[in-house]
Length: 175
Image (tube, rainbow, N blue to C red; front, side, top):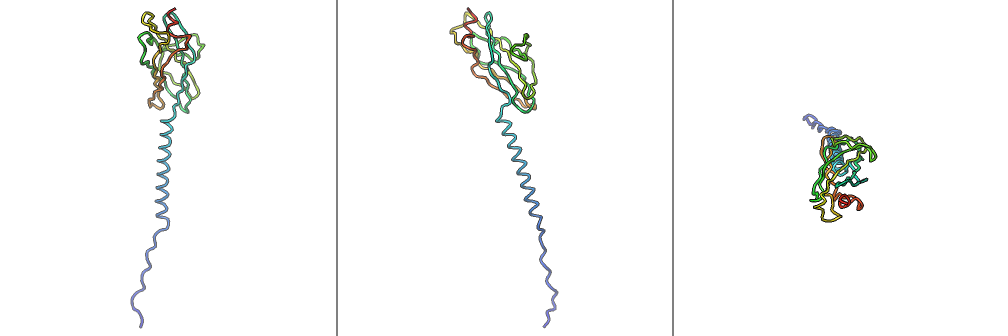
Protein backbone atom coordinates (compact mmCIF):
# COMPACT_ATOMS: atom_id res chain seq x y z
CA UNK A 1 0.00 0.00 0.00
CA UNK A 2 1.10 3.31 -0.87
CA UNK A 3 1.01 6.08 1.62
CA UNK A 4 -1.00 8.86 0.14
CA UNK A 5 -0.16 11.41 2.75
CA UNK A 6 2.03 14.26 1.70
CA UNK A 7 5.64 14.11 2.80
CA UNK A 8 6.28 15.70 6.18
CA UNK A 9 7.62 19.22 6.04
CA UNK A 10 11.17 19.48 7.26
CA UNK A 11 11.55 21.16 10.67
CA UNK A 12 12.23 24.87 10.39
CA UNK A 13 15.94 25.40 10.81
CA UNK A 14 16.97 27.97 13.44
CA UNK A 15 19.47 30.52 12.26
CA UNK A 16 22.86 29.52 13.54
CA UNK A 17 24.05 33.09 14.06
CA UNK A 18 21.00 34.50 15.91
CA UNK A 19 22.03 33.42 19.38
CA UNK A 20 25.69 34.24 18.70
CA UNK A 21 24.78 37.83 17.83
CA UNK A 22 22.99 38.19 21.15
CA UNK A 23 25.95 36.78 23.04
CA UNK A 24 28.34 39.10 21.25
CA UNK A 25 26.09 42.11 21.91
CA UNK A 26 25.73 41.16 25.58
CA UNK A 27 29.47 40.69 25.95
CA UNK A 28 30.13 44.03 24.25
CA UNK A 29 27.73 45.87 26.57
CA UNK A 30 29.30 44.16 29.60
CA UNK A 31 32.79 45.13 28.41
CA UNK A 32 31.81 48.77 27.90
CA UNK A 33 30.19 48.91 31.36
CA UNK A 34 33.29 47.35 32.93
CA UNK A 35 35.49 49.95 31.22
CA UNK A 36 33.27 52.78 32.50
CA UNK A 37 33.36 51.39 36.05
CA UNK A 38 37.15 51.00 35.88
CA UNK A 39 37.53 54.59 34.63
CA UNK A 40 35.33 55.91 37.44
CA UNK A 41 37.25 53.90 40.03
CA UNK A 42 40.55 55.26 38.68
CA UNK A 43 39.09 58.77 38.75
CA UNK A 44 38.04 58.62 42.39
CA UNK A 45 41.06 56.71 43.69
CA UNK A 46 43.82 58.77 42.08
CA UNK A 47 44.44 62.28 43.32
CA UNK A 48 45.94 64.45 40.57
CA UNK A 49 46.93 67.28 42.94
CA UNK A 50 50.00 66.75 45.09
CA UNK A 51 51.08 69.20 47.77
CA UNK A 52 54.12 69.66 49.98
CA UNK A 53 55.31 72.33 52.38
CA UNK A 54 58.37 73.66 50.59
CA UNK A 55 59.55 76.65 52.54
CA UNK A 56 58.69 79.15 55.23
CA UNK A 57 59.76 82.34 56.90
CA UNK A 58 59.02 84.62 59.81
CA UNK A 59 58.20 88.28 59.94
CA UNK A 60 57.13 90.69 62.60
CA UNK A 61 54.25 88.86 64.28
CA UNK A 62 53.72 86.65 61.24
CA UNK A 63 54.64 83.20 59.94
CA UNK A 64 54.75 82.52 56.22
CA UNK A 65 54.44 79.00 54.81
CA UNK A 66 54.85 78.10 51.14
CA UNK A 67 53.02 75.06 49.84
CA UNK A 68 53.91 73.59 46.45
CA UNK A 69 50.82 72.48 44.52
CA UNK A 70 51.52 70.31 41.46
CA UNK A 71 49.23 68.74 38.89
CA UNK A 72 50.31 65.09 38.64
CA UNK A 73 47.21 64.13 36.68
CA UNK A 74 46.59 63.71 32.98
CA UNK A 75 44.16 66.60 32.63
CA UNK A 76 44.06 70.28 33.51
CA UNK A 77 42.93 71.06 37.04
CA UNK A 78 41.73 74.33 38.51
CA UNK A 79 42.54 75.33 42.08
CA UNK A 80 39.44 77.22 43.15
CA UNK A 81 39.87 77.90 46.86
CA UNK A 82 42.17 77.50 49.85
CA UNK A 83 40.51 77.24 53.27
CA UNK A 84 42.14 77.23 56.70
CA UNK A 85 40.54 75.31 59.53
CA UNK A 86 41.36 74.87 63.18
CA UNK A 87 43.68 77.84 63.51
CA UNK A 88 44.83 78.34 67.06
CA UNK A 89 43.94 81.40 69.07
CA UNK A 90 47.51 82.59 68.67
CA UNK A 91 47.95 82.01 64.93
CA UNK A 92 45.26 82.87 62.40
CA UNK A 93 45.43 82.71 58.63
CA UNK A 94 45.70 86.31 57.50
CA UNK A 95 46.09 85.99 53.73
CA UNK A 96 46.47 83.49 50.91
CA UNK A 97 48.61 84.34 47.94
CA UNK A 98 50.06 82.58 44.94
CA UNK A 99 53.28 82.80 42.99
CA UNK A 100 54.81 80.79 40.14
CA UNK A 101 58.03 79.86 41.95
CA UNK A 102 59.40 79.99 45.50
CA UNK A 103 61.85 82.70 44.45
CA UNK A 104 59.40 84.91 42.55
CA UNK A 105 59.69 88.47 43.90
CA UNK A 106 55.95 89.14 44.15
CA UNK A 107 53.12 87.26 45.77
CA UNK A 108 49.84 87.78 43.95
CA UNK A 109 46.54 87.73 45.80
CA UNK A 110 44.98 84.29 45.44
CA UNK A 111 42.65 83.83 42.49
CA UNK A 112 41.52 80.55 40.92
CA UNK A 113 44.29 79.15 38.74
CA UNK A 114 44.42 76.39 36.14
CA UNK A 115 47.39 74.00 36.16
CA UNK A 116 48.21 71.90 33.13
CA UNK A 117 49.61 68.38 33.64
CA UNK A 118 53.07 68.63 35.22
CA UNK A 119 52.67 72.31 36.05
CA UNK A 120 53.10 73.63 39.60
CA UNK A 121 52.45 76.76 41.55
CA UNK A 122 53.13 77.89 45.09
CA UNK A 123 50.42 78.82 47.57
CA UNK A 124 51.66 81.32 50.13
CA UNK A 125 49.94 81.29 53.51
CA UNK A 126 50.55 84.20 55.86
CA UNK A 127 49.53 83.66 59.48
CA UNK A 128 49.15 86.53 61.89
CA UNK A 129 50.57 85.68 65.28
CA UNK A 130 49.02 87.22 68.38
CA UNK A 131 52.04 87.18 70.65
CA UNK A 132 50.17 87.92 73.87
CA UNK A 133 47.95 84.85 73.27
CA UNK A 134 50.79 82.53 72.31
CA UNK A 135 50.89 79.73 74.88
CA UNK A 136 53.69 77.52 73.53
CA UNK A 137 56.37 77.66 70.90
CA UNK A 138 55.07 74.55 69.13
CA UNK A 139 51.58 75.82 68.36
CA UNK A 140 50.32 74.23 65.14
CA UNK A 141 48.97 76.42 62.41
CA UNK A 142 45.86 74.28 61.79
CA UNK A 143 44.78 72.41 58.67
CA UNK A 144 44.41 73.53 55.08
CA UNK A 145 41.91 72.38 52.45
CA UNK A 146 42.91 73.04 48.85
CA UNK A 147 39.77 72.84 46.73
CA UNK A 148 40.15 72.07 43.05
CA UNK A 149 38.21 70.88 40.01
CA UNK A 150 38.91 68.52 37.14
CA UNK A 151 36.32 68.63 34.34
CA UNK A 152 34.13 70.73 36.65
CA UNK A 153 34.00 68.02 39.34
CA UNK A 154 35.14 69.39 42.69
CA UNK A 155 37.67 67.63 44.91
CA UNK A 156 39.56 68.55 48.08
CA UNK A 157 43.19 67.99 49.07
CA UNK A 158 43.39 68.03 52.85
CA UNK A 159 46.69 69.03 54.47
CA UNK A 160 46.58 68.04 58.13
CA UNK A 161 48.38 69.89 60.90
CA UNK A 162 50.18 72.52 58.88
CA UNK A 163 53.08 73.72 60.91
CA UNK A 164 56.22 75.42 59.92
CA UNK A 165 59.64 74.08 60.73
CA UNK A 166 60.65 74.36 64.41
CA UNK A 167 62.93 77.30 63.70
CA UNK A 168 59.93 79.05 62.11
CA UNK A 169 57.47 78.41 64.94
CA UNK A 170 54.96 81.12 65.80
CA UNK A 171 57.00 81.90 68.95
CA UNK A 172 59.92 83.01 66.74
CA UNK A 173 57.71 85.73 65.26
CA UNK A 174 57.33 87.27 68.70
CA UNK A 175 61.00 87.65 69.59
